[in-house]
Length: 496
Image (cartoon, rainbow, N blue to C red; front, side):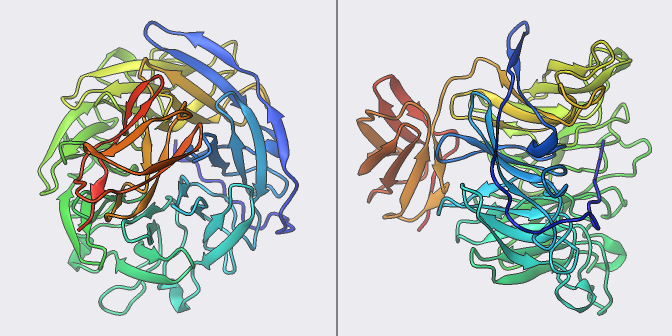
């Protein structure tokens, strides 16, 4: 379900509130090949409705936001240990932004960057920076330009490019080629210090064939360009996949067909993920062979293949209407969630699933009512793979508090994947200092970039800093620890 909580007009002091510490109850559910554990139930000062995926911090903790609740009823920023100890670090409220819906990104400097859908100086959302301890700085308030030519209502989070700048989308505003305000979205760039520029205004092509309403965020590909989706528009009005250069040149790669009778899907709400083979994978919310969404693969050149159509089983036991982006896991498969459906047709309130690059789907878990309560969460949002190998996610409803539907949960899903390391950033020139995130890194004896040994320093059990060595080429990072050699989940790109 696409649920947006309009928090405009709610009373707010706009001041940073004290931290709230919560030790959440953990409930494990043993499944045939995996274990789902409810780590935390939201409610009260801890916030409500965590819409965004979590992000693993350099310190090994998980960080995230809720879109509502908290001291100002405008959402919260929180830290959570893998064991479930939650600390509320910041309470959102206008004029510093209301309702963060997009996932955070932790920059190389250690701070987190994100967006709020509402609030700010003009009420149309913000871009903010927040430290791991909860000190927030508003970098930009949307609709600062006459007629909102800079855009407004940024639903998605940001992506940090190889140049250090951040890129994002807004769901409204912007200016067309005829000088009129189109009101259907923009792509923007903002520096870590807050210098803002609009890169592209949608509906700048006749008939809006370039798309409308970029609801999801962007991903930077190995070629340096950014890729994303629009919810509507395109040649058939049902959304697009596009490529845009860091300089703002946009190419529409694919237009989804009309919703009715559309086998390739329609209305992509989620963004894309690039696989190791260079192709992108994504989901559509509607259409497909059964009308309730798809998983697709698309090449950088725009050749799209539908690899799965949801609701292919009786009563949609495999799920329906995926909203969140897929996660490319270390085993080469993808993991994701659907907002509806599942093996309990009368009670199915979303699923967690695995899908291979070839399109073989396995439903891992169905979120459902139990005794008329959504105790283990319902309506799951996005997933993230922790460096311990497990998947972590949120549900926007459910939990112990606020029966029957609750205020949302955090869960972990163990699927048998082993630990790995993750570089921050994922690209850089020779001589760049890279933070390597992992677990059990104390006592590491070696770090290499695609086989070339690097100078490194063990900062903690969850962080190593290493310098990209002379002669290094693009490829996996490996860290030798007392427990074995850990490889990075993605290739590190060595820039010229």
